[in-house]
Length: 194
Image 1: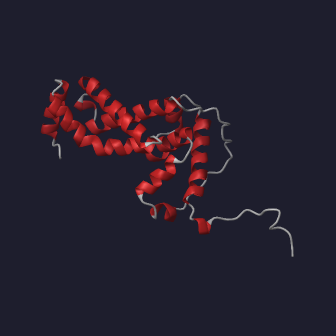
Image 2 (image 1 turned 180 degrees about the vertical axis):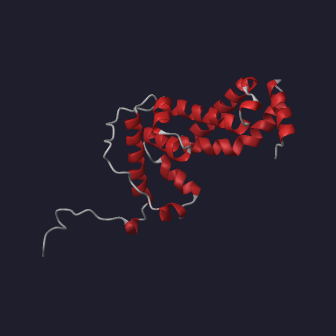
Image 3 (image 1 turned 90 degrees about the vertical axis):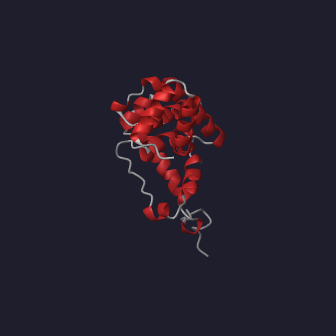
C-alpha cells in the first residue's frame, strides 16, 4: 500500500479519532519495516513481536501528539519502536563492564565477508552477541547513534558504549569468518619439534 501525503494526513486524522480501520491500515503499512527493526534489537522472535505490539500500542495511544509539520510519520514510529526495544532489553541487561581504553584499536571486518552474507544470516550472527553488546552495536552501526547519544539512552558512559561496540566487532569477526579462514592459535603441542 502506498500512502500519498493527502491520504496519509487523512489516515493520521482518522487514527487520532480512534478509527479502528485506519489503525489497521497504519499497522499493515508499517508492519514489515518495524518488525524487521525489532528483530535486529531483540534476541528472540517472540520478544521482537512483543516489542512490535507494545510499540504500536504506544503509537496509537500517542498519535494525537504527532505533528506532520515536525517530521515524517515513519520516523516518529521508528523512534517509538527503538525506544520500546531498548526498554525490553534494558530490563535484563547488566552494563557493568570494564570501559575500553582510548588507545585500543578498532576491529575491522572485511567488507567482502559482509557482502557474502544474507541479511537473515547477519541478523542471526548479531543475535548471538550478548544483549548489552548487541544493543550498543545496533544503535551505533545500524541506526547511526553516537556514543554520547547511546550513553544518554542507556545510562552508561561513552567509554562503556565504545567497549561494547569494540567487543561486538571482535565477536562478529569471529562469527563471520569462514571456518577454513580462521587462524589456529599455537598450542603447546604445536610448538614441539619432531
